[in-house]
Figure 1 (cartoon, one colour):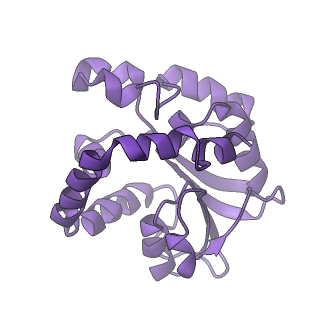
Figure 2 (tube, helix red, strand yellow):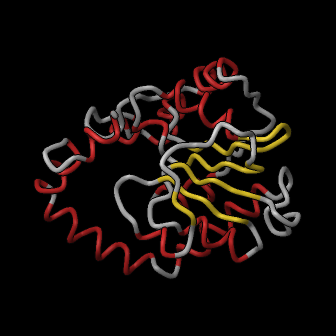
Length: 203
């Protein structure tokens, strides 16, 4: 319901888009400029995940869910490697010419891998989202979470990247996120902390 209100024609997302005509123009220019970099960025991510998950050679029938999949670029790379790919995305249908669209995470423990890439800071109930994703994940499955971390602010110096009150509603420290994951029945097995990966995925 929160997402429906946010993405409704009269909601904050649409209002922000109307106000941001110049930003869209600049975004188009940046997209063209970064088109060659994007596959490299996603390969960096998959390579970083490879020690913890068979991203490059999944077992037959392995399923991945990207919660907030956008245009599906991460799912594209995973599907090319043999994953069965599913996505949830209220703002666009672009990804679903190729991937299976879901309205909510199924609570059947059927997913081997779930991607939550720069989504948790946009929702008003992150604990609820994590509980839903925990219910969708099989025992021994992997949830990858990436988001702006407030405790890295001294390093990058961009407060509005962490929270801006309009798009990024909540900010997290590592301690906060670890506690939130624990409340959802999830544990942290590894942290990926590499400047090259951060720059590729967030610039």
